[in-house]
Image 1 (cartoon, one colour):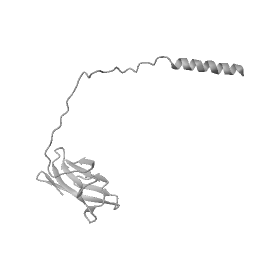
Image 2 (cartoon, helix red, strand yellow):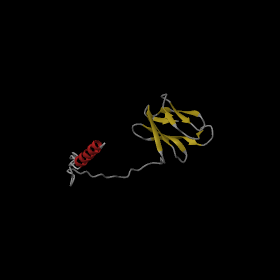
Image 3 (cartoon, helix red, strand yellow):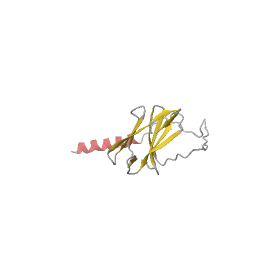
Image 4 (tube, one colour):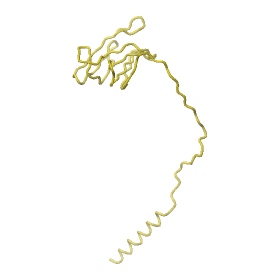
Length: 139
């Protein structure tokens, strides 16, 4: 029994001595100043009447980009030309009518001429057809 106590005592002393050894360098040098600096500037861009409160998802296809705005004032969906990002039309009005949505969760451009939207609160899928004539989209 006495031998075990001496053994634990010596192991404890060895652990204390080993833990007091100097630590290895981290490998990262310390910087007093950066060798290279960049300046970031911002500017204002004039916008038209498209304002988003919480843009959530973007679906892009067939030269059209449809943006889903979750917390909107009037419309859930906004269509833009792609890659120019020129506004086409807002659609998917908030409401309980036939052409309106209670919520919009998923947007898909499955066909070349339609936008499909899932309204989870109503448990239905709505479809909007559009045409491309005279180099602009018409819903």
